[in-house]
Image (cartoon, rainbow, N blue to C red):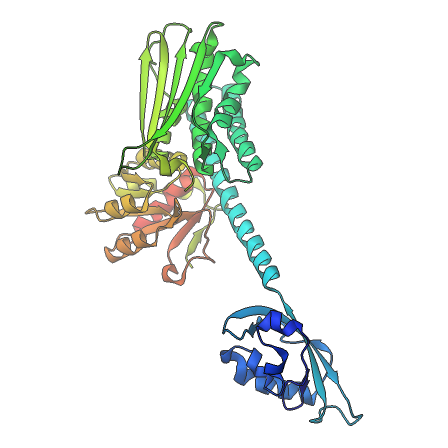
Length: 452
């Protein structure tokens, strides 16, 4: 309760819980004692205005309000105001009282911020998933000989991606267990004959991106095994074993081995397609690791080794994704141009790499980490660059600053930012939002270089 001069005349015992003051410490003091210093002068004027025109209403409609505790810390509040006329005199007299009801809304604010964070992450993940699906369709179509062939292969790859996402959803997107991922990706090929599969390794939870990329590789391995390898023969078996280790003072490394036996005699393939790229180049790039393929007569062997920390948890101009037409793009402008590609998703990086090479560009990268991107950005005679904004938890701004300093034209490619949310530092820089058609990326880069 506050009098017409702004002095506190009454507080209930709850005041100590909210503000840290005992009631006796506040009586007779200005109500501004409970308000952050930066708002006190403004509050005196607002209090006077309310006293002249008192009414029951919330305080500070449309503004964020904060209380100040005895120890100087602040917290968000909601305040309801009620005018109390104790004498019967006209409202606004000095002997009138103002009843202020204060509610601590810290928990609500945290909940609202959490919801906003979830929505931002959902938008980011959805755009990345759509971009991955788009690349999968493009890459699958390149090696198919008929519509029926495309439908079968593309559907199987979508199912594999969906399988990995189901596992992640069951863990609230914290990750997916390696064992669960292996079993889930091989289940459609085993016809419940689980004795044909042997899995062994420690209990490890893959990061979401790692689960997605490793899941696609396991699907391609299982597909090849069912067509040409161990699963194409009744006596065929597959063993999948993984370990994680590291010597003293050295980073830990993850290793997973896929070993087939009991199938037909193995011969190296005479041609390779998108599936081969997934099990070799894509996972190697995704995890900054090494992949070994061995076509032993008695059985195919695939091995991946990678740093454990890559696998496990411890305003600009927007290019219109709908209206840009492929025929409008002079992609010959990219021929012989040195283009830096920065993208942490291995599948997207491979796709951008391939489409730019088809346009005649010389590719620098792709770089999946901030350190690697910074090193490549310092290279001489770069013609242009395309930068994914978020790189494994880091943001690409240092690389962008280096390119700008060296007068290298570049564009952003992101599922998290758009022209409205880019930091002011990058206002006017082109940004292409994920997903985008392959030729849109090529065309945007060609236009960028032509205008530089």
